[in-house]
Length: 185
Image (tube, rainbow, N blue to C red; front, side, top):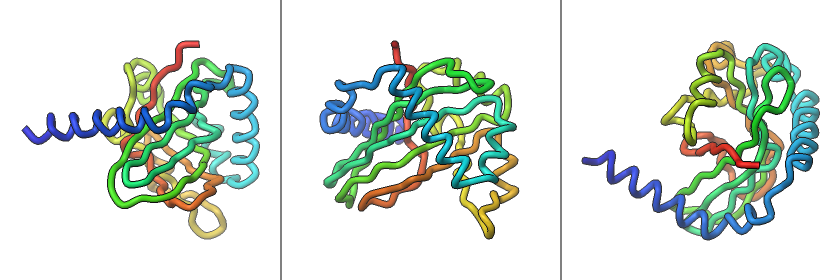
């Protein structure tokens, strides 16, 4: 009985978040704008993380969100738009959204990359109707060790996530609860 209540609460939070953040989505970026922003984010990622770039070269697909905005005053949410790249080419466009409740005040902007390291992980993502991190697939958040190297445990995961270029007053580096939905463009 708890699971359905948790699901209802989660959906209610997403709805509240929509009221706060989705005015940003009303000014949705064009495919061209997303593509330019994705290229810039990938260039910055390569520059900041040579170890991450080596993993990117092995990935069968990458979901890149160049700009994810999070804001909250008690109830918070985040939203961003990006692209799924397979073999270096954009194949689809997605948004990411999540909502949260609790002690929070502020805003932040961050870039996110989710790498699908296996064909199965990528296929499960692409065949879903709205994919939620932590529910439909577990994303291993990569933290850099000494010298900017990636931990070997994270590098073995079928889905690997990076959060970088974090700016703002909030500090929330997680993918859990983020829902990715294909954009109809």
